[in-house]
Length: 158
Image (cartoon, rainbow, N blue to C red; front, side):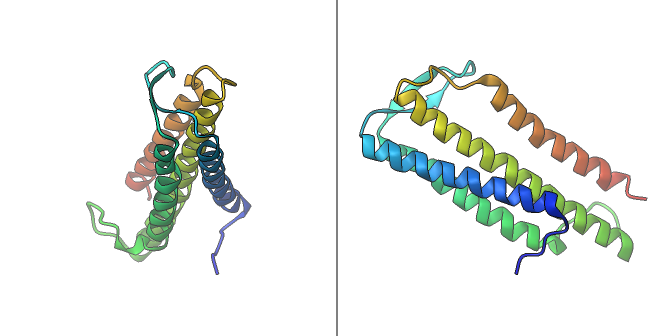
């Protein structure tokens, strides 16, 4: 049974799973339509490459692999290497902090993958013209914010 420290982290996992499901549904719909799917976007969010709908299958596959890998990593936080010796309290603090980091990163990545999948499908149907830059920047910004918070707490745990 999966242990959740509070409802916030349960919500993060639910959002992650919804991102994966969004990727899978987008892939199925793209595959059934058999039209060219955007496979690459430039920095402005405009499509600069199209491909076969089967190529879109990589997004759900990568989402599932990342989700499983990060889920395993968040449950194996005992094998993390740190640049200094830890006391028992410090070890527990680091383990909890790593667990939180993995949950947050997993949510950001799955949300980003789901957004890219659904955007590709909508662009191929003519319902969108390009990917919105602000969504990408928010997701990437949240990833960096999680990493900076983790590093700050790593070096200021006393």
